[in-house]
Amino acid sequence: MTSKPPAGLDAAAFMRSHWQREPLLVRKAFPGFSDPLSPREVLALAGDPDATSRLVRRRGTAYSLEHGPISPSRFQQLPRRDWTVLVQDTNHFSPGARELLARFDFIPHARIDDVMVSYAAPGGSVGPHVDSYDVFLLQGHGRRRWQISRQEDHRFVPGIDLKILERFTADEEWVLEAGDMLYLPPGIAHHGVAESECLTWSIGFRAPTDAELVTGFLDFLRDRLAPAGQYRDPGAAPARHPGEIPPGLVAHAASAMESIHWNGALLREFTGRFLSEPKAHVYFTPPNRPLTRAQFAREAARRGVALDPRSRLMFSGTMFFLNGEAAEVPAKARAMLQSLADGRRIAGPVEAPREFWDVTHGWYLQGYAHAGETP
Image (cartoon, rainbow, N blue to C red; front, side):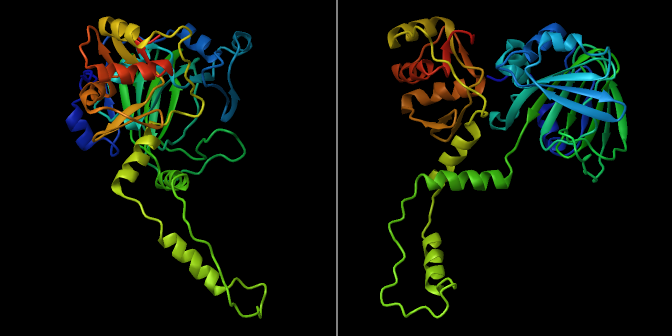
């Protein structure tokens, strides 16, 4: 069961008219919005070695970047304005951020990037830039002024680590307050500046490029192909030009490439593995004192079962994919595992066939799933 979309956003109409097409401002998309994390908690999370954080400072039109973790003493050295802290993947750390992400369940989980939060002192900004992904910019505590541009000039300022646009001419602008939300499709240049101390939540959705898909598929095939042939040239005449590649060798290479074949099932398996692969920095922690299969089934039947916040579970037809691997799923467990993939948790009490508990207990032992609420 999916969560209710943001207020004032008709999911079907939005996907039809705005998704990947046009920006959309939604006032009071989250009436009475309460930030999943307070400013103090965001800054504390920026110092967590398990989190990915950045500090961006602005001095006039110049920007500088520092990578985290960021210590509390560093914040004490900063001026009262013109700096921003960004923390990625807050949905891995905050139940509130996960609930926020669930409000966008009308978009396939295969497209999810993360929920990023930015804490900004007055005047804080990361500069005018353009993204290659869809993003919902939800304003939390404080106010931020957003400017957008449909300009085609996407040249960046050279010589700095940040991809800041060399030229930016705004077409439209708004000041967003708590609960207001701005959707931006890929390629729309935008510039946000904090008018007061503020938090902004960026719910991002990525799509793989064709280059990423092709490169990933070739890597996938490499591990599954074992061509048996080898070039041979018995009876070849003496070489007149030893530096020349023999035409027969070129022809043999072409023949070997033409022998590579794949089918729809192999493509589906690759796609599932590729899209469910967690980010490179993600790791899972198995339980210290694991429950037996019977203990897990009893506990999860009572309290429910949930995916770990870092887990990515998806399905295509009868095939299931978890964290970059194809999962063996008995037929009797598929319906409930589809529900788990859709909702990321199944609340207790849970009545399920033994095959469901067999699968989820195996995932629990690897740290991919939990009995009850996620930790």
